[in-house]
Image 1 (cartoon, rainbow, N blue to C red):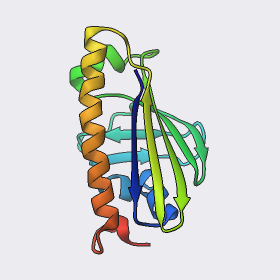
Image 2: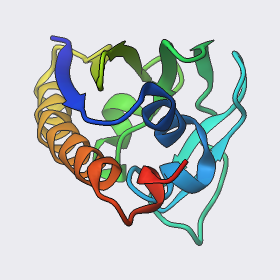
Image 3: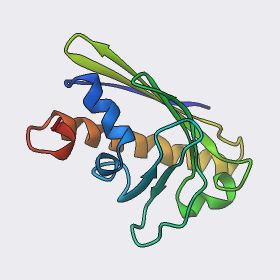
Length: 150
């Protein structure tokens, strides 16, 4: 039931790590607004509406710079009843590894309910993660995007 995606990015690990851990960079590809406190137990909150930054309560569970980032995840409002309530949060783990001139990025998203609503939420996230990771790779590998700059 785990979602697993792996991509290879033609940039150094530090830039890829920063795309996930610095608010201005996260806002360039993952969510229009974010609140990140880069330490274990700190906030990792993504806001689909920059005008509504009500705290989501999502936390960083692991912060092992620059290898592992693990955080709680809340889905979009359409899946709120199946994955956004206390005790129902899913978890995302991102692993980073430098391979010569590439960075291997592995994303695992776990904690899906085995219900019709849980499976619908999972399928939506399978597609969404593929799209987001493609956008991340294109942005970091470009020459003129905020994510490609040191």
